[in-house]
Length: 210
Image (cartoon, rainbow, N blue to C red; front, side, top):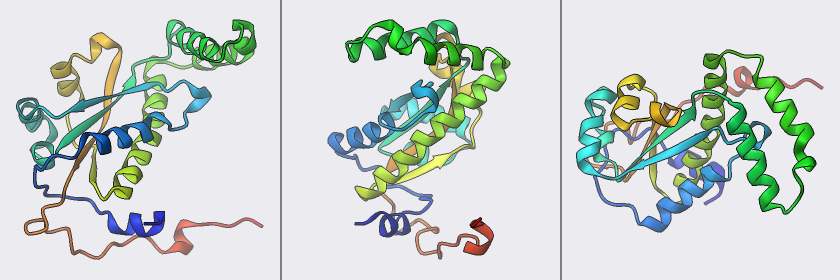
């Protein structure tokens, strides 16, 4: 399937069957997120992968009782850094230089830029920046899932503080930003399956400046 046909195939799945997705396909979807671009290459987020039914059941009321939470095969939680710290930025560049077998001085200018840039903002502003970076990975996960004909429902309707507490994210310096339920559409019971896909007219979506 080409990407346009694939994205026309996908929709906001409201009911899933609960059937398990093969692990190799889940791995591919996660790898797409892993390969996503991010500002200065910092990748300021992590993905929590949940397949445990008991844990998904605990998340259900936190996520407005949306059925995809428990009917999914896997629930991905995109958790952004709560702040850009010197230690985190240092660690990113140290790892980069180690993997490329190059001296730390190679990226000193880039690292100092990152430290200076994020040092100007509040912790809350930095979190929102990190969450936007996580959304890039979220989008690629959705596309990668569709290419494998796996349904993926992104969800922002949840109580992040309650979810962070349940999963102990604060202790890790993380805050949940988005959920992504992966599974298979329940064709017999999903009212949204055969609803026409509608997007705003192209002339309202694209402005070309020539």
